[in-house]
Length: 418
Image (cartoon, rainbow, N blue to C red):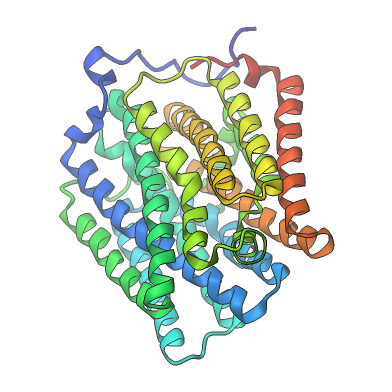
């Protein structure tokens, strides 16, 4: 067969107007949410640079860096399905207000600990767990809110723009974070992050969109199971999720960047900020191009090729000994990852009914965040045994192998066309 079978009728083709570049920006509410998230996510990326650098200075251990991924992902695995149920049952905007406030509180705690010189690996792990728990409720609400703010035909463009804005934030955040880390210190970064959350909270309060939930999705285990059943009936979604999990688990070793910046490439905290920004540079440029284009039709093959290129770029980065070559390779991996991410988001949001979007987003979040975070633990262990270069290079090679295996074994994905 040429396409996998999915539930429900196929979406109608977009009109020429709806296919025009950046058409989703016509929505005032979408512009507000997009702008607020740009500022907030930039602050979050700055915070993560400071946290990783502090943890590295306190421990000096790649395993300790890898364990940070465990404490970030554990609460997501525990609470994500519950977060999805709440996102489908409650007002998604109000749920985001609560979660963004909780995330801001984590940055307040980090700032106080840093200012009083009481930061410790245990405190960082504990606050990472709290932030992960808040994210488990925030991400499903946020992803399920976006389709409510635009017309149906504008959704692919809105998703491309949203992912692009995320990547722009991950360019600006690490670059600013590296500079401020070298000139102002981590406390200043944490304070800036606190203020960045006030911007997104203000944007949420200014939204004209109001919705209290459909009421047909009770807060129960049965509601969570309904989302899992839908996923099982939709092979295009679960196959892309599984492949993304496997690929990011093997290639999710970029938490080792402080070791590359300090010991291998010898570029210090400013170079670390640039290395963190490299992937988002490639991703943002690619995302901008995708946002101005019609959606890719041969989506299955595009995902497989994108993941293969991503893994090859990461593997070559692992053995590179020149800073700017490493930067370009990371940028190329970011571009490939953007292609995969945009297509997966379009497929999932298009095929998922609105009343299930929160729950589907929660399942996706487990795979999307669980792969790289658990991969960081794996990368830390391999780096401890064989070194950071071997950890990153082997992970990239296994990522390529995963893409090749999926192309051979999962025919519906290979043949899928949007």
